[in-house]
Length: 221
Image (cartoon, rainbow, N blue to C red; front, side):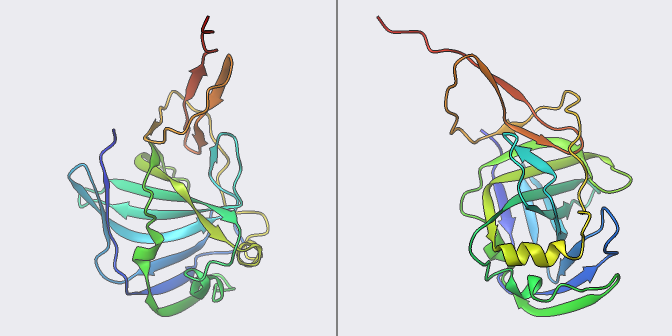
């Protein structure tokens, strides 16, 4: 049982998009919202600073690589970061994200303003997650970051992913790191038993992951 994720995101914010240095590695298009938007976990409130995207993803789920990943960066008054990640998979065009991906700033330090955006719609109903303590994925890779990777995935069209990828032809992600003993906590319980195998729940940058021993079921006479 994990502490609940209490999102307080507005349904009507303005966004400022910033291309902070394409096509250099570790750079991105960052969306900064107006107003007070926050996430509360276990009695601590973390204010949303910005959200951005990576191509490819910076976590693996059961070894699976997703085309992109979104990161929502929050910080408490004490300076502690909690970053919420969502995997992005290919499917229908994402109409919610269309104003962003139709207007990605094409040059370094380029900006674009969106007058009205429903930030709350980016929070899924299913808030099951994978959680661990890791690091930032950009220099200087600060440790002590609370990571929450949501099980529910964002869906975007191939054209939307390609529009972002054109800005970052070499990608803008940190390679997956060693586990270094870090453990994942999760409330996702949809595991299927496998005979005498090890299954990886999740691997992320900054050294993430855990392994679960799957035992062969005892035959019933």
